[in-house]
Length: 194
Image 1 (cartoon, rainbow, N blue to C red):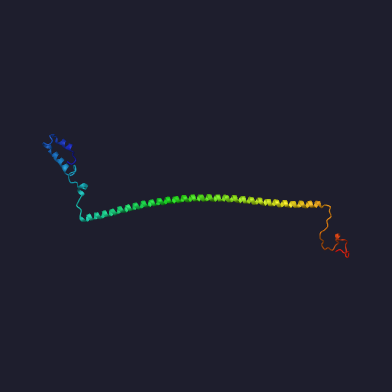
Image 2: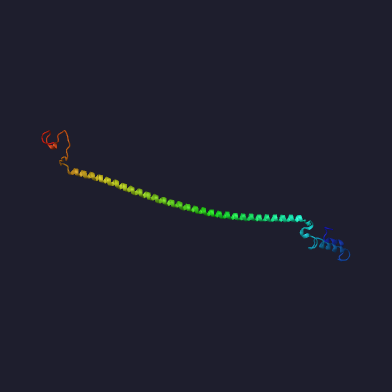
């Protein structure tokens, strides 16, 4: 009778006078279902454990408490690891951001330093070129002045020679010579001229 429903049972009994006659046993089945172990919250269900619930010994209770303590410690350990991991992640993230900022600042400093070196090199190159140009101009001017002075000296000498053209010039000094000197008289000794 386990697999039959109430409608199956009522169809078999064939009697519709409910509590009289052959259908009284239907009520018995209903009461057995309601109060017998599964119907409408009544009966012996043992809070969801059913037939498997048994009385625990004192040792089993102690083991349960120990396992509960171990379970609590594992939970605390897991929470500690989670907290440490979170703190480590935050630390790594913070250090990563600080390192990123330092690298960006270092990069900017290097770019500024390179730009400063380029500016200084451009100024140095311009100053060097200006110094070379001014020294070249000074040297060129000096060479031109020396050439002008040399040419002026030649011009003066040529003008002097032109002015003295046809004028007899006498020597201003004499040197000892074995020959006769035409400017001091006749040749020979004893003339009174040396």
